[in-house]
Image 1 (cartoon, one colour):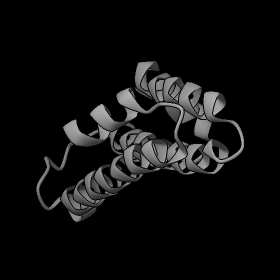
Image 2 (cartoon, helix red, strand yellow):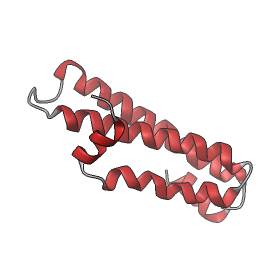
Image 3 (cartoon, helix red, strand yellow):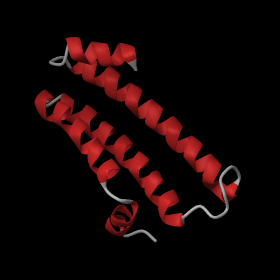
Image 4 (cartoon, rainbow, N blue to C red):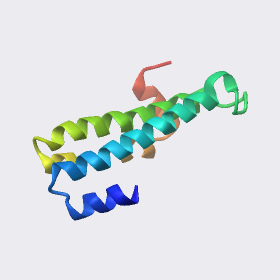
Length: 108
């Protein structure tokens, strides 16, 4: 992340810097999602008493970030400033309590 962050800081008006940063973030988020899916699948590496709401909302938070970064890449070719603003959207699910996030996703 240090290289892509530095690239974005130095060249925030260039689409390529946004593409590199967001691409890096998508890869990291995807790998984190795969790890979370693996450890929670059939309770292989987590406690069997893990709250299902916590399990589900954590997965949704990771997927939300990946989707927002993909959208931001597309928007960066049209309107760079809006793409940079989308970084703030990543914070919203992280700040919401698990039960609120669970109710908002309508998935049981």
